[in-house]
Amino acid sequence: MRILVAEKLAEEGIALMREAGHEVDVRLEMSPAELIAAIGDYEALIVRSATQATREVIEAGVRLKIIGRAGVGIDNVDVAAATERGVIVCNAPTSNVISAAEQTFALMLACARRIAQANANMHEGAWNRNLFTGNELYGKTLAIFGLGRIGGLVAARARAFEMKCIGYDPYATPERAAELGVVLYDRLEDILPQADFITVHLPRSKETLGMFGTEQFALMKDGVYVINAARGGIYDLEALADAIRSGKVAGAGIDVYEKEPCTASPLHGLDAAVLTPHLGASTTEAQARAGVQTAEYVLLGLEGKMVPTAVNVALVPDDVMTAVTPFIDACQTVGVMLAQLAEEAIESITVRVFGELAHNDVGLLGTAALRGILSISSDDPVNFVNANYLAEQRGISVKMEKSPIRSEYASMVSVEALAGGRPVEVAITTSGPEGTFRVVSVLGYKLDLIPGKYVFIQKYADKPGQLGKIGTILGNHGINISTMEVGVREEKTVMALILMNVDEPVPPEVRAEIKEAVGVTDGWFIQL
Image (cartoon, rainbow, N blue to C red; front, top):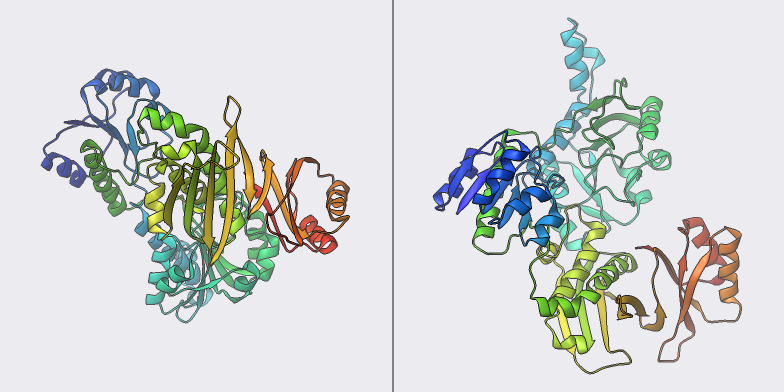
């Protein structure tokens, strides 16, 4: 087959594709019109970040089977257009993990030994050894936030420096932490006071944006060093700058920024801040690795095999898709709910399908649930092709069960997740011409509610007046309840469960007030 390489790619990758018997044409700096005119002759297209694989390009690529992006992001590829035409889109998300881990240590050492400051001073013609006394890494405690691929590599390298590693990752299992030699903690306030060095390897999300602010810096040791080679925005830079000026933070090594390029920030001009322009993946080796990995994945796609890093939906027979489509988004939403209900790393899920739907191949619904679960914690794009692969890497097992016997619904799907040895369950059905889905069971409590963006769940002793107290407290804080449903269990119980759709987030202090007033035993605020 013919492969078009539209941007510079490592020679190792090009050789790999030619050795597989394919014709590889390297045509750099093509204009959009030239690419559209040429792409019809090729089965595969490889780009980096400059070439735009637009809808027009994809539609002109009548023979296209796969588009490979030699890097992590896929912003320059119209994934929707590719999916519509059955074209696989893949990337090379692990190509830069070693480089990112090494960049973390480069920043750590630069801060601890004041390398950048001493270098600048020397270039000014000075010799001031006494101004640049630093600190050793040996024997120090390193707190790693995020124990994914890069965090794991950082932990391995820290052990070579004989550092003590502690970690925080709500989605890491104790087994994963033990393998890495990391002592795992559940709460920020327990880990921050212990750390001599702090490094973050987390995705940017609503939970991690501004994760370290004034309150968190106050909990840290005096003279701590903080590093960020992951995602911009995890540290509040105003608070970090204040912490540097006060001496709380002895040094900061920052490679990523909330908005890039970044030429001005609260850290610019601070001598203790080592700033680099997002160099985590900028090594010759990482670029070569991206080329080889992309070539390997493109070859798999051309052979019709599973592409582990594909970012779009696998093709499903039309009859199966028609049957399961009303439940796909619903199962993904259930996964998002379960990830927040579990509050710990999920070890396994069981998807049970009842009624008419059970007559179909429903494996895609398990993938949809996994996609929802992993979207909460993964720093990789999660889709219907790679969700099972990512779950396997995290040790999450999936079990599918089907029963054509109908319950009270024509079709129903229940997803149960096991986390920390504790099961959590959500069941849904669909109704109406548009397939609107409804939650019909949570934690074994029967109910019937169409979930909104913000769902507030409370479990408490079933006594008169309890529901009124909850509504009053929410009302006092200006939080409107749009709809709600009280759950019912088949067996006798003294506990009640209520689901509320609220119009805005319920802050922690309001949840604490409700817990005190009502005696809530379990409570969750879920954002969908």
